[in-house]
Image 1 (spheres, helix red, strand yellow):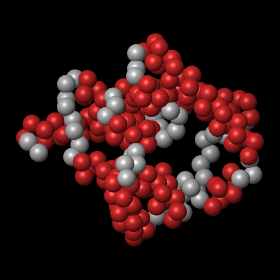
Image 2 (cartoon, rainbow, N blue to C red):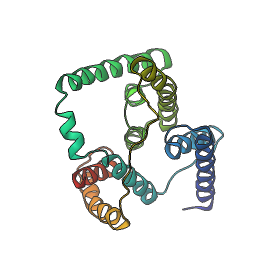
Image 3 (cartoon, helix red, strand yellow):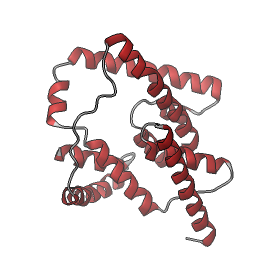
Length: 218
C-alpha cells in the first residue's frame, strides 16, 4: 500500500470513529455501523479516497455475518412456523415496498436499476452494503438512503406501536454472550466456507459464510 493510500485509509478510520461517537451520543441505532458508514461517506464527499485493504474488509464483513446469524435459533424458527399467514403477508408487503421504492429512486433520483434496488431493500444494512461493494455500485449513496430509512423507522415505529398496542418497546430481554473460544471456532469454520463461496461467485460471500456458520451453530 502506497503512503498516500495509507493516509487516506487512516483518515477514513478517523472519520468512521467520529461518526460512531456522534451516532452513539445521539442514541442512533447500530452506531458502529450506521455512524461509521455516514462518517466515511461524508469524508468521501470531501475528497478522501478511502479504500480498505481487502483482508481487513473481508474480516469485518465476516464478523458482521456471524453477528447476523446469531438471530437464527431453534426457538425463532419454531415460532415463525406458527405464523404462516403473517409471514406470507410480510413477504408480499416487502416485495411491493421494494418494487415501488426502487421505481421512485430510478424515476425521480436518476439511480441505475441495481443501485435503486439495493437502496430500497429493507433489512440488514451490512448485507446490502456488502453486495453493493461487490457489485461496484455507489456505496455512499446507498448508505445515506438506507440510513435515512433506519432513522425514519426508529423515530416513527416505536411511538406507533406504543400508541396502537400499548407495548413497551423499550423493554429489554436477557442477552447471552458467546465465549472467545466459540467465536474463534465460528470464525475458523467460516473462512473456508467463505473461500468456497467466493470461488463460485456467490454475492457477499464473506458475509453469507459468516451468517450460515453462525446460524447453523445456533
